[in-house]
Image (cartoon, rainbow, N blue to C red; front, top):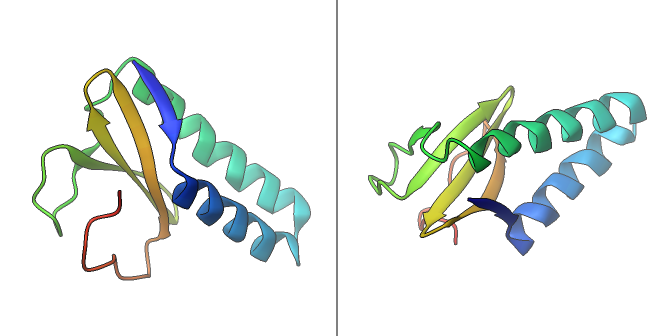
Amino acid sequence: MSVEWSEGATRQIQAEHSWIARTSPARADALAERIIERTVSLETNPRLGAEVPEYGDDELRELFEHPYRILYRLDGENVQIVAIIHASRRLPTNPPR
């Protein structure tokens, strides 16, 4: 199983990194590294995360890396990271792709 990142998820992690780096570059680097490392476990255990309750779609799942929700979609032999969202924010009305 391979883990791929969508353009949207890549932009989101970069934006979060940039925001945090304004005050603490080391903290921003550590957080981005933790989020990326968390997704590596999906290569061998793609159903590790729970179904996202707001959407009710078994193929859309999530992991948590405090304080972020890492949303990913199962797609055959691939796992696609589709969103990195701060846990205090509401999810979009439509599931991310």
